Amino acid sequence: MSLKFEVEAVPEGLESHYTQTDSGTFQLNVEGLADNSAEIEALKKENEDYKGKVKEFRQHNVTLRQELEKTTKTDDGGSPNIDKLIEDAVSEMKTKMTTTVEERNQLLSQLEEVVLSDKVKDIAIQHGVYETALSDIVTRSKNVFTVKDGKPIPKENIGRDANGELLTPNSWIVQLQESAPHLFKPSTGTGATRPVRGGTGKDTRTAAQRIADGLNLSNKSAKTVM
Image (cartoon, one colour):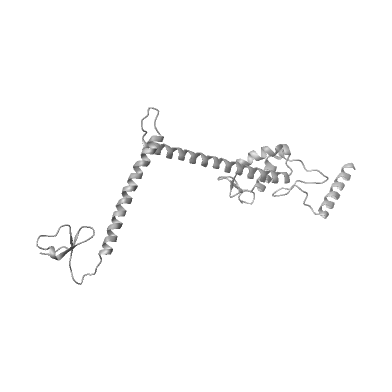
């Protein structure tokens, strides 16, 4: 029969082979076996400490739940459904997050409108638009452009400019000068012509060209008088 190293009670007739420990158990007397009783006791203590912490944790949860129930009594004095409280809190949080996202999207939309409006206004003014027509042009531009990364870009299925390139606010304004000339101030000055295809609204002719145009106009006037 094999003998156990540690027992709670010594088998009859084997008392001389065992020695009682401080914890009350009996250990077999074995020569050549390293004395690791200190390590065993340490492990036992750690195990007991662990059990104590688990018990304390469980008790803490029970106490916490009881306190929560006390502070959240229903009108009739009963205890509410804790799971329902948690579900309601999560639902409220999701609603707040949704509201925050919607507000953020609204702010981004407003910012995009400001960016597009300012850009179109600046270019339209350069092309000689009537100030009273600016709001009309800005409204039209919203049907043509959107804003991405802070820059106006044409929407899908929008036509291209005369060169087959994607529309820009400038090339779109040039097209608008031709399709809706009533929105722009007429050109003024002798021999002055309105520039097209990306012009700036200014007379871009050289001095020699302006003199030649003036002489041609004078000759035409003289022939008319004769």
